[in-house]
Image (cartoon, rainbow, N blue to C red):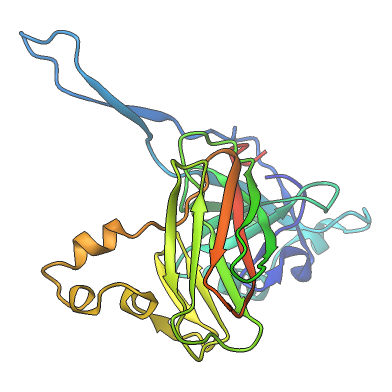
Length: 296
């Protein structure tokens, strides 16, 4: 872990008068496995298909009472049952991956992980508790940066060319951003927006704005779309053929033919094209860069 404090599920560790103290255990990076065919008598050299991470990242560390002022006596450093209860109630409250924000020493840049605390054990001296060993199991083999956002101003039906940089330290994965499209008032009938990634072989998403809404948000990772009221929109609501999008015999073909914007490593050249007399004023793209430094 970097730093001596972290933010999780609505609270800072320091709010509980505790701080992070790294145990002696060595932090391990996640290893990779090779996807390959079996070795046979006719194929002594197996075909190699890809490589993948063997597991998700696990962070292990120790928290103790904050003694920065160096005035805590041994008795004051002990944790009683009530203090342990409060900490466990907080740390074990999340049941699904939740953000663990770990500021660096300058408290400006953070490394963020998503996961749950899967193991909490007492740090005992004799029969008395002086801290807690924590194991945090992430939902990915790496951490992420803070959210980076960039807003593009639309100019009616005049194409807008710009770029979005992906500075991730993972070159084998795309970033799946969140896109927010805002109207100057509400979207009119048959308003459209085309977002083309010229760096991704010119692939594009073509969206028909839901009339009457003032904004929509597209989560390209989760593949869902919501309006300004938080209502979930179907692909039919943004222009896909309604008969096809409601027919489950054909939905998979139509779903996978829809391009959800993805960002390649380094700079992505984007082109935005609105329909004539469009009310679309801004498009904001947000994403977290991948950080592979682990718990350091």
